[in-house]
Length: 65
Image 1 (cartoon, rainbow, N blue to C red):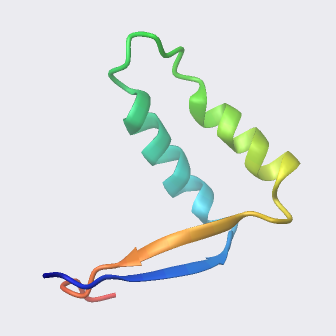
Image 2 (tube, rainbow, N blue to C red):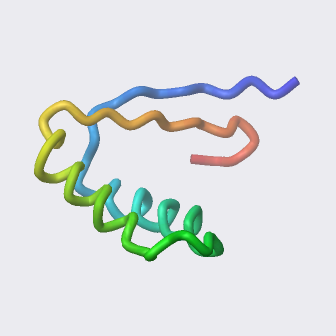
């Protein structure tokens, strides 16, 4: 069994690149996608919820951080 540590923290400006990359990868092969999802998420993150956004990080104990 692998035990992982989850850290809930406030969002940082540097998180945008990772969130965008994950979003692009998630919708990359979907035929119904216009491939604009990362822009929609970016607008929500920076305009609507930037003051209350939280990020969950999963720390892998097998990788050095």
